[in-house]
Image 1 (cartoon, protein in one colour):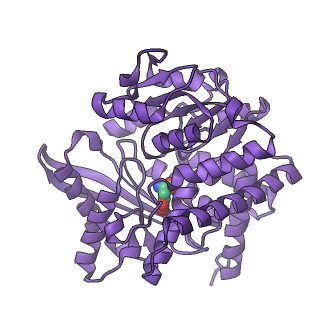
Image 2 (cartoon, rainbow, N blue to C red; image 1 turned 90 degrees about the horizontal axis):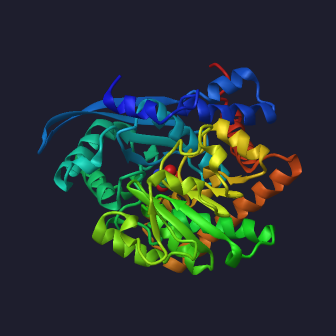
Length: 430
Ligand code: GLU
């Protein structure tokens, strides 16, 4: 086992691998909608698994980095999904994330399939020049499988608009084409969309607000804890703070910052910029705790906005929130999910909660295809419509079938994928 695989195994006490976890949700949904076992086997098998070893001459010496692109399903449209740079990005994890993307695109109803990419290394150990080399090497290995009508890449954990720009440039240099729509989450100057940077968090806020209205709750009485202060976590902290919620805790990989009277996310961001962690803002009423403490704090809404496998059977007992809004992908294991359901905790699942990111990626792709760019107001309004429509469909299904939001979301998503598969004749042997 590689060192990366060992550390991944160490934080995964679930008896299921990441891909088995997502398959469990998919199987439950396929059972509920009456798909045959033979069809289920076909739809649960990734269409293609691309892997490569990137050989990169870094400032730290030559490196051989495992790289993946898993193309899970394209029955509803071209493959779509981000690329993550993370030491735990092994094949099982990338397969799980590719399947999650397919379900997510179906739940939010954009005409795209599901894929995911990853390079297994720790980007924090390399400088900008090395990251650029690794990004370009990824495209040199994967370019035959990518393209505006084939498979559209995007940012994910520890990948940025700048990295998307390098990847686009490498792709266009190799193919000799101008094809900005082969990747989304690009810098604006290269054909990115306004609003893409805040879309994941903004989409989640629309969904949470719809849930809060439906339950007749008052944001001013709701205390929020957010795990992760990256792109998604820091933006949702600011948006919810503005909307009247009390942000009682924020965390990053180095620690948790807790203040029962509420934190100002802008101030915390400034302190983190200067001091390297949210805990640099400790003082006054704000105390610094260790990184994992965030999950067990007394709050109403817990937002995991970092990595997968955070809420597990071994720590779910300490969670006190009544609402969990999944901004990260696959943050809750199926074992923990079942326990939360028994305890009547509402889990608004990743496949809807964080779908704002891929929704504005879809808008970016549409704009690239048309070479006609929208205003911030147009993007915001269309994102809102998409999120609210998907929430209404989901909520109706939750109540009609008395199931969890996750089960209902997987049923909606898999039903749409299954219909497209059947219509294409993908279950028949030719
Ligand atoms: N990586 C994001 C996700 O997991 C965005 C994917 C995209 O924009 O294609 O949803």
